[in-house]
Image (cartoon, rainbow, N blue to C red):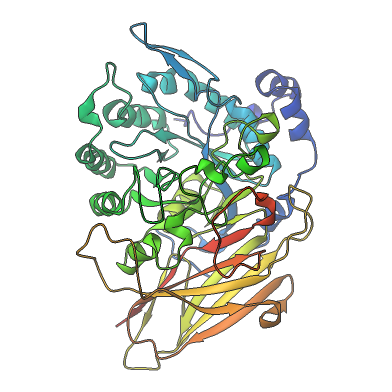
Length: 504
């Protein structure tokens, strides 16, 4: 029996007239125009084939390339509910305004090959998703087959701020989301049920998700948006991240390193809508601070990853605080153009993130005695032999202009290393004092190999388990400074996820 959600070539070849009907004239013209910004990144997907990578699905890992995407995009189904009526009545377009297909068209336009619709919940919203939004997603998949479009939502996580809830692509995906949202989203019940808004309910949700035959993914959104100071957290806390990851380490796998709403300063607002305590270089404090919470979690040996998203609601040119999907922030996943493999890449950390298309490809590897490991993987080193570990960083700068019409330049690349010492007894700990910037590299320190730049560095006499990660910038800031009203286009960064080293 044919999967009703699979893409059909005949359905994919829909007329421009139908695009006008569902997405509007402006979006149709955008879809018909040449790629703007991000076009180089799109082309690179056909060429960049990094070194071997583990493949939990058994396919050909050589066909994997870096594929840019966005797992946090809102549509007109982020609306509002009239709760004076029972059941509540839903109205589209109150918070985000674009049809699902418009987002897909713009994602394609800015070089994305995968994206995810993540609309807000609310009282009885699980039925809105199932009966109204999901049919529009299926239509969008047929209209824009070049972009793999995941189904899910911005989950109203019990006791925490919003999270991505990404559902695997299969014939019963709509029912799977309905089950999880209707049972566990804290605002789905009507009347409101206070028992849904507890950490215990969040752990129950994660365990239920982990027990499903097709496992979803959960990634925290704008984790420090409610923080009031450096290390003074709000809705999301280190303890909650640890407890959730303990309950479902293959489900609850990370947070947004670079939150959305990055265009805020273009309309006089804060980057990320972080109004109480700012982002640093567009990145959440949990990620941007060397030796901070992200490093604390990695130092326990957790596989905890960062991503970058648009959180698109309303474009900044229409008075909003957002860029289109892929216009400014991209999450790059090493995968085949396949729903399952992209999700596998997100689950297993084959990810790097960047803003402003400062670079279009980034590979980090660690090697010893002929063995190597890439981002998200682990290199085993024997303590009985030579324990030097060779780190190679390979990046490709943008060949052309980004979406702002700029030609950004990489001014510096940092290699960051931290020790892995095991689980912390203090669940509230948000520091890893062993994590350091071990080397900084400028243009004189990297070699050009065809279209790439290559940096090599040796970690001498490695005696214990560690991880290595990389960041780079267009600025001259030694550490990313707290953001103000500077243009986000003048403050670009990229971050890799870590490669791990285990000494046996």
